[in-house]
Amino acid sequence: MTERLAEILADSFFKILIPGLTMTIPLTAISFALALVIATAVALVQFANVRVLRQLARFYIWVVRGTPLLVQLYVVFYGMPKLGILLDPFPAAVIVFSINEGAYCAETIRAALEAVPVGQMEAGYCVGMSYLQIIRRIVLPQALRTAFPPLSNSLIALLKDTSLASNITVLEMLMATQRIVARTYEPLALYLEVGAIYLLFSTVLTKLQRVGEKKLARA
Amino acid sequence: MLEIKGLQKSFGSLEVLRSVDLDLEKGDVVAILGPSGSGKTTMLRCINFLERADAGEMVFDGEHFDMHRAAKRDIARIRRKTAFVFQNYNLFLNKTALQNVTEGLVIARKFPKAQAEKIAMRALTKVGMADRKDYYPSQLSGGQQQRVAIARALATDPEIILFDEPTSALDPELTGEVLAVMRQLAGEGMTMLVVTHEMGFARNVSSRVIFMENGVIVESGTAKEFFDHPKQERTKAFIRTVQGD
Ligand SMILES: Nc1ncnc2c1ncn2[C@@H]1O[C@H](COP(=O)(O)OP(=O)(O)O)[C@@H](O)[C@H]1O
Ligand SMILES: [Mg+2]
Image (cartoon, rainbow over all chains, first blue to last red; front, side):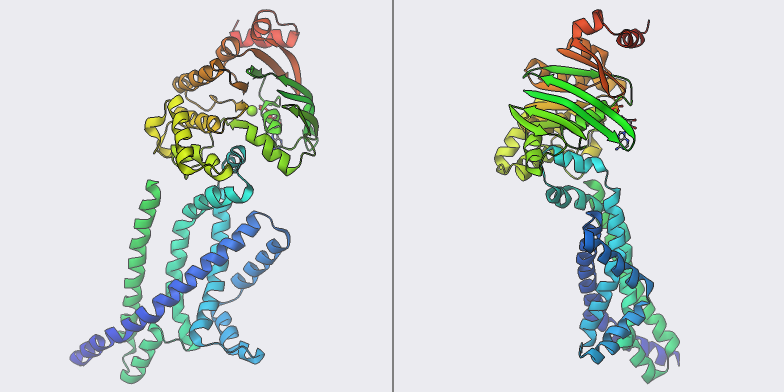
């Protein structure tokens, strides 16, 4: 009995890890990279108080943060085909995760932008720089440094949230585990196993976060 | 060289500057004294357009500007001819001492990097900070930061430097190094408008002293006139307080 279990766990380890490496991690990385782009743009239009875009940004954040991620996944993957928009599971997941994460990260970056002392901006003007030059070279780099720890936390949260993509048939780690469970009827052991692999991944990210923070602190 | 006429500025219903006039010749070092809240900072900020005046005329190198309506392009031009040294330094926190000085040259004025660094090193040497060129502001004392800030101001080759209480945020033992640099600049003929509480500087370095209170210039004159023969009662009282008798 325990021998059989050991065998199943050993056998399934790579069957879960490989989708982790080929699906969960790319899904997390691509979504987060896009989320950062969205978040920076959305934070900047608010910070710079660009008229219509500012309102749009608030609306976007309001909707995205006020609705469940799983519902967003369902709307895009199961709902959009009604409008003739048919997406494969992976791109659908990337779109939803980056839009969702973008809203949260936008708030983080906006707060960090607002925390940059106003004197930094004024000093930039006084040496003749333009608003955009100051934002790009002085304010944004400082804000991103402030935002680094909370953004790292968001990244780790996203890594775990990608498990929701199993609901729209993305063959990531949880989905891979569910398939093995269906075959072997060992839910406790296998779900603990996939949990442990998530833990491993997030531990690596936490370590990377530490390294990053140290590097930033040195400058 | 720089003339200001009828400068006015209010914040809401608070009248901070009520028709201030100012006239600086090249090489003048003008000390602005006055109690806190009298509008000294606001005046400097209006001259550099960090604050938009409600009214006022500026004549800079013979060119006239409406301080209330000045266009962006004119503001950029005026800023290029001026430099500002802040009370709390405001060095770019994400840049080294050297980068703080080159930033305005490379980014705003499009100098080639090598040339900008040469100019920057000359400025840092002048303020005695060349050996700290790769330090970040967080690694420098207040006095050192302020000297880098002065180097940053110098590097852009301004016609006038505006100082807003450059030593007020410093521990007493650090004010000397900053004042020494300013004294040196004054000696070299730099035009300076200096808001300060350092009576030694006002008396011994500045060529002219202006005393401000409640948004108006109460008295102005040469340093000697001002300290030895003040005309206004208010100025006499002020000088008695700062001299502590
Ligand atoms: N941005 C601002 N908004 C509102 N009030 C201000 C602002 N800046 C300065 N003030 C007010 O203007 C007055 C003059 O300030 P300031 O120019 O800093 O005086 P000083 O530099 O002589 O101490 C003060 O009463 C101050 O509170
Ligand atoms: Mg002041």
